[in-house]
Image 1 (cartoon, rainbow, N blue to C red):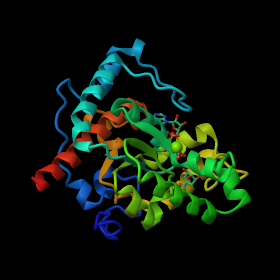
Image 2: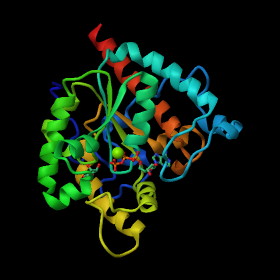
Image 3: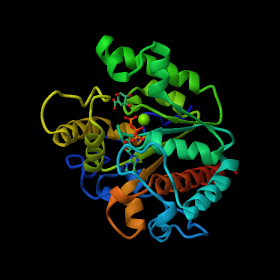
Length: 287
Ligand SMILES: Nc1ncnc2c1ncn2[C@@H]1O[C@H](COP(=O)(O)OP(=O)(O)OP(=O)(O)O)[C@@H](O)[C@H]1O
Ligand SMILES: O=C(O)C1=C[C@@H](O)[C@@H](O)[C@H](O)C1
Ligand SMILES: [Mg+2]
């Protein structure tokens, strides 16, 4: 187990604690702020311009994506980066952590496909284990604590397996025991600005997300307020991840600041780059 679990992100390491919407450099724990730039891609890393050139083959639904179509260029880069990462991964599982709606399921499926891994969603596994078809109902019929106990059991069971990409529940990071399971693999934090998250969630509704659901009021405003308070409680826990994929950073690399136009495959490419950085740094220390 990683000896640093639960200890690495010190309270106060976040410069912008009270305002999670500052540019990400200002609210990032020192250890992520200091990360070295990702290695340049051989084929070029500007997925936006590739996407723009190949509009016909790259379509994206802004909300409620069922299937992600990516451009030929993005597909090639994904394949190439996956091939670079696979030997270092050594069959270890990849765990995606992040707030509700951050794209863990969407990006996780792409990563699983290009790595030749199987995809699992811990929320779905809890539903199966409990025999209730929605997390919202599990919260309602039992309790959040009951859900969390089952979530820990699912993560414990998954941790004995190999070659999986696991999309975890947004709150899985809050229990230290879960980190002891997830740290058997590689953990990736999908860091998405809260206003973008609130927009995504408002677009699909909050009914499936029990911690956000309230009967009345503007869905965006409600989601935004609740996400803000949850993020403030959890950000140090997310920062335990081995690598952070910041949508703000990807947008800057692409030469703009609009995270809403980033394709899931561009985010998956960044995740592979961050995985490579983390794994090759580690390999250098071991050798
Ligand atoms: N890059 C993206 N651009 C636009 N919409 C996206 C993007 N990635 C995901 N989405 C949409 O945002 C919503 C949330 O995505 P997803 O279900 O993958 O997140 P999640 O992190 O798994 O959420 P949860 O914690 O609730 O399981 C979905 O409707 C999805 O289609
Ligand atoms: O952020 C959270 O606490 C949660 C996120 C979802 O994935 C589910 O695991 C559940 O709705 C709780
Ligand atoms: Mg999900």
